[in-house]
Image 1 (cartoon, rainbow, N blue to C red):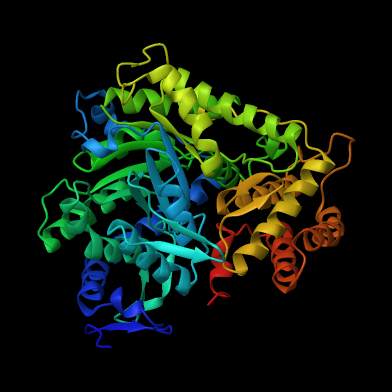
Image 2 (tube, rainbow, N blue to C red):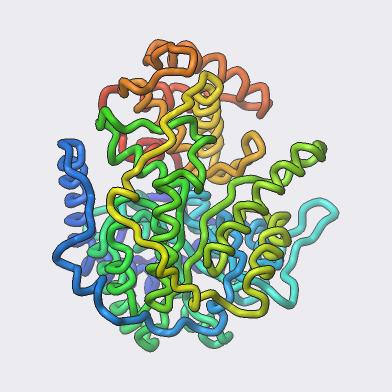
Length: 527
């Protein structure tokens, strides 16, 4: 296999991988890396500097320098026909069976995920690209035992989530330096599929995760412009929805839409990572402490403010506003529990639709009909609710920073965080990034909340259980073996990954330094 000058691949090229890792596709990866990686590193360094300022007591606010953008009368470019109706979006990893089931689910669109619901080992990343090539050309199928999976005539619109700016692709070097995971995922998908999608009446559509500023959105926009030019496709062909899943990005939503205005497909309320981001950004603030994860819902004051601001911002700019994920999933063999879970999904989507959102996310095909019903009740045949401008919503910086509820913090909540953290990390080490745990679909975002909460409860003076006991490192260390035993009993079989996960969880939740992302150290341990 011939590689472009300066490109190295530090991983096995399995059968079929050569159709993805062609010289021309890798040349595009290399060109984008050389043109943009220095800026990516600068922006990541700016994140670190800002984190230091927040640790020192600075509070985020709307930017004075960009007030003219927030006050301006502009709109994003119109979105293509197959992105106009997004009442229900389903999400899941780039795994073959998932792709077929999600495209067939009856959802309007499917976000296929190289990021939080995917463990980014080499095999998953490249096989995922092969699966998408096959799906777009409608030749994807899978036979398991007696059952064959293949596409229906009508399928959901495909939207791809590449990795965030903080993640490298360790197996591919350009000029001796690791490439960005996001650039790698994006470039390979674009090279192989952009023209094919256009020929089929669609286009290359993306979800962009984990951004912390409009300057990070500008970087993506410049990459879009450069890639469209390289591939000879019209400017504005790429469309991207940005997940607002960091507290600092919530103060720059107008600016993010503005930077991407030629390429924008709106914003999404990425609620789980958003909660994690709040904990992460105010981790040393002695006045900040959130209650048990289960108590921090979309009706919490800071979450409500964020959800309504996102909606208002999008509709002012003619941009789709997509509600976040309900992590609940159908529960087999327990009709009572299942009914409770389904009622939770229904109420979540009802609230989003009534507020004015144009659609919302689900994690399981079985939830599509319930979510669809709630959005159709409100939208009818309309593709969106742009007419719902919400002049009644006036969100201030103080509203976005009104972190409630602080109580209760319970032993059950602490144990749940430990249990979910160990269970998820163990599955992730085994190559599975999307895991049903305790009747919730957990991905990296929800596991990050679990770990960061434990870390903060240990350190915060408010980290006290409802029975008066202070959460301590010793308490956590004593509970970990008990929760590990429960996890091992529930998964059965080979448990080595879960034992390693318990070690990692203990280290990351009790050590003095706060590790930014749960999976970054782990990435070095997987193939």
